[in-house]
Length: 102
Image 1 (cartoon, helix red, strand yellow):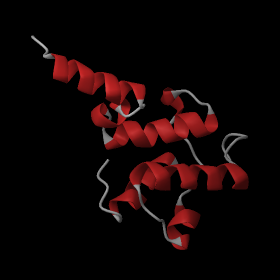
Image 2 (image 1 turned 30 degrees about the vertical axis):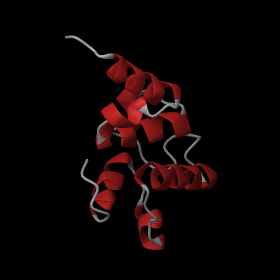
Image 3 (image 1 turned 180 degrees about the vertical axis):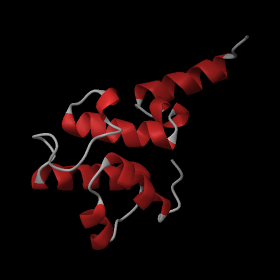
């Protein structure tokens, strides 16, 4: 594959400004990454992850998670959805209400 100077410059700017990840990540990748970074956990634990099942996911951790989800997907969650977000899997269903397919 041959790259032009413009293409290389474009990718360099994306990478330098940490935007490159946004271009290549799926919504599932973004969603998973929020949990992994917020709670410093392994990706393998995500599917069974539930509120209060780990020490980091307490009330403060919950609000940190909600803020991160809202930031990454550019949404504002309703209070009922914030309260209902009690597992990794439930969060995927909640995001569908905001037209985010995971």
